[in-house]
Length: 555
Image 1 (cartoon, rainbow, N blue to C red):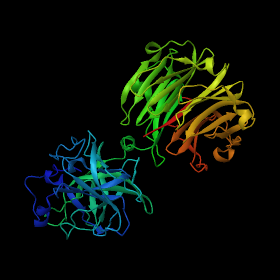
Image 2: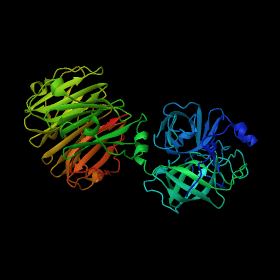
Image 3: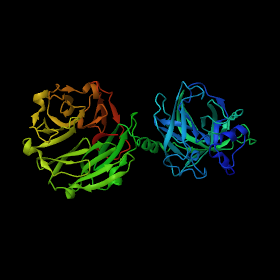
Image 4: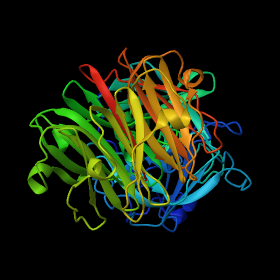
């Protein structure tokens, strides 16, 4: 639909006094404030948020898309709403967000928080607002991944002006029909008298996927305001910012909040990809590590560990050298890949690498030319010299799998597979090494073992392994005794694993098992000893053949 330029007075919130008087302040360029439609039923569209920006400088609407994040229009926070994307960082005006209150006067429901950080898109009128405190008990709105279509119908809930009220206290909703789709926007027209009014800027444009279930397609940006109180305009057209193509950006932004997460490094042929599992079980889009951290000529082996909010990665590159990188919470790189064989020692033919964290120290264990080596990068970035573990713990030949974990007591545990059997040793907090001990003798014999993974749980150690007849798990308690091996078939099902990884995530021990049919099966042992329902990591977006997954945790 061809249209004259939308009036700039519809791009940002309004002064409360101007709203009450029915006029617009000349010093501000306000957006819409609530849908001129029908009152929403109690409890419906609970994810809808009302934003009070400044001392009633502006009012907008948004949607909760994570317990910490509300999505809305960037123009709500901009000095010049015609340039809404330059609003990153702390908001200029203190902002209060109210979520889950159909009736704003009903303070016994919903929640309020303040906005502490803004993350804006550079290509459209859209921003994610980080809340200072999380909103729990309200299901966030899911981001749609299917584009809007001409003649499709949507609902728009909002807290702005209606046909009869300047500043309503109740959420309203209206029906809208698509009459144009552009790369970053969707044009809609109100039906049955619906319109986007002042205060509705940022309101969620939602698609109903099934009765009572909705998903976010766009957010309201600007409109003609036909039928809104105090307006003489009759047109109900609106321009809305598309979000259906931004599910990945939303996930990446959500992942920047400090809190326990599972980090996964997925090997596919000689390539390496990264994804983050968020608290609700969803994952961020896959990132090509060599494209962002540096090309190391392919990846033969990799290990990773989280220290605070950083993810430390050491990969065995195509050149046979160890390469080290540090990924930060925001998805950038504190350090791109550097060659450790140059920075430290050239240890010869490296076949295995495993990382563990003890406090802020990074422990690195590698297998090279039949020997096990160990070094430490302490919290200030200084490396110790490599020591030969097999000189002090005893020889162990033909190691085919190795895994390490640090415990709360400062111990470093190593589990290694040699000759189809699992052996264990530890380094005490004072730096003394124990001798290799047979796990089969301590926890029970099994069929030949091909892969092993260890993870702490407080001061205890989880040890899981793949044998030729299935997957098994045991515990080494803090007092040094072992729990008998137990099959994981009842947890992960009838699968054939090829490799396994483990990580401590908050109070849980998580496991990732790579299978022969190109899948990754995930589960977790809870603090009470029960197991989480197994899930499968979706690898369809990764090209090539999956050759292994390593997991760790970070804050």
